[in-house]
Length: 628
Image (cartoon, rainbow, N blue to C red; front, side, top):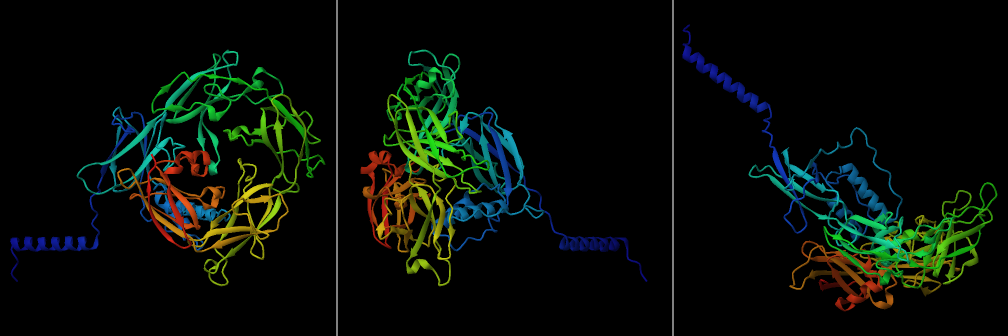
């Protein structure tokens, strides 16, 4: 047999090698070369190209794009509620894993439906791994680069001492010490990814505090207050505070830009009298009345000096008396009160919720005696809470009106403490709102305090149970005035009326403490829908505007008639479940809380609203002009 020559053998060998390589590539997955990208983060001041050095940058990612796949929404959710949960899911930081995001969605759902908080998902071996995180610090130009990043979605945060992020969406009150953004880094190698973050620089407010005689006062607490409107009520919110030194000087630093009332507050009156016991809380430049105080404008990155406060004298008084309560402790003595509150009434003055709680300074307390010191002239509701007996968690309450004169004390006040009253709410739904036969009506009713200061009435939170007849039963509600709030209603439904013994109490509210039966809550499924667009003076759509629907003046005490929304990227907004009636629509770039529920706040804007008449089941289309 003829042997093949050398060239033939070499050719056959090359064919075998090629065949082997083909088989190898056919059975072994090809691993592409890793794509590493760079991210350039820049931090500057707002409305400036000036870089901020020394800012801490935190980068988290890449994140899974699987979304919140573990959450299954309840059929009892209304479209508005479902939208709130969708917003939570879409706006949550990508660093939250599916497990955590699912738990957050379930907790929000329970809150919206007025249900007990669900248990958290146990974190076992199958729980998602933590998302990778890196940090860095910006250089003198405000830049920092992250290298070797794989494509994906990332969260970038920046913070620096003395700087702040922008105010929350649609709200001029409250700023965060951080600013963040999300971005997607793709596989394109053309240029590095970029993230531009802006921070607001804090400011300094300084001055002196002097006695009524003009002498410097040390150890006086000075506050920077902003006016807030929780549930339409006017209150002071302390943003920053410092104590005066031995020269009576103070310096508030890292104050976010904004408008403030600067106030000096006397210390809590103790058992040892001092000259400061007669000093009233005084606002700059020297007034006891917060409504007459000068508003201090604090620009970004400024040093506002010379905010001197001349304290005012005010003859403080004592309120003393006795608590009458049926509750006794294990030793047979009267149960000691939990809190004393003095809530100012009728004068429209600004108040700081932190200053309404007083301590009992009576030397004899076993027989129910109390003594409150350092009270200034005025009209107050004196409220005391006492823990319930025999393991009852809900506090009992005593309440009475006291008038503190300009000169003299108030004595022999009796606080009759009684346990809360049972309140029943019976929901009456129309045919469309009832749902399928044999199913539980998709509605959850709650009570909301209408008092100026709701803390003693809504603490602990009002909770209810369903009795066999389907009524919502609140076992212990403190004496006061309340509105009915629905946290779960069928789609486009609304509370049409609340009635007691054939009389409507929907607008005025439920009065607890007077003899009553079951309150009938009528629910209609024929709510109207308002859809519209917010336009500026050039008729351009305005994104992220705050829109408020305000009822006619005769019904503005009814909190259930108000609606609020935020415009989308195209300036559009939708409000559903609107009750029939006369309304006005208002739109602002930003708004402090629920200020649209406050008459004094709304007074300058009344003529700038868009009037709208709502009929049952209608769809109203409108345009709203942005208020500047």
